[in-house]
Image (tube, rainbow, N blue to C red; front, top):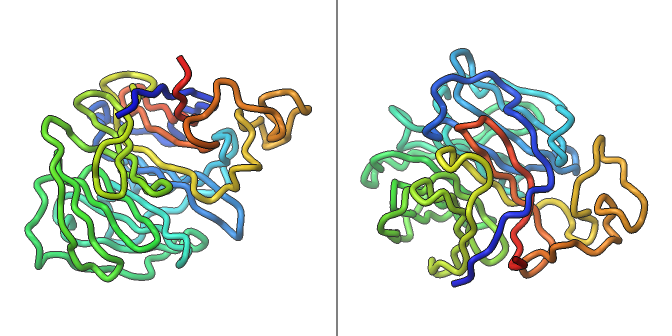
Length: 271
């Protein structure tokens, strides 16, 4: 297992006003495509109707915001399914046995599944989607489902409290609230790398991997308004990244609920 570091490249405060979020409850994030362009979709539980806010990859520009679909007030996790171009969501409370999909273009619910034939989780805090699988957290446990809702199995990670979950290449990435760490697991569930989370150690809440953008077009720092800097600057994709990213260029978005901040960055093995 490797110990990595999260290199922060972009930051932004929550785009919505929340209350009582310091324990991480109520935040979800994913990277999705809207008419072919990648955006960060963010949600936090608020005193009024919750909104999904669509932000630029640099976190500095808001495209739009949609109220969550009618009757879906407790979304706790989101994951983008690229083949269907839908955001799948999990909820807590009375709806924790259901998952549903929405169209990011319209904000409308398009599909749902009832998983009540399986044992109810104690408390959902993370939910991720890959091309063929769902991954749902239940405190120190991860459950895997097929896209038609068949439960394949589970794995327990003693001592961890799993918050956000995201699909990543040949792996999954999640947040351990107990250790305030970002954790990468392999396709068979073994932990391959960890990194201290940025921001407030008490705020570990959610994470998303950008699987939409092309790696070769990723600058180390996403420039303001998306306007590239000159070659040689970290805001141009032809400039080598320093420090070097772990394995290959990538971007993660991490949510710190204690300070109500969103961090964009990447993992590096460099000291």
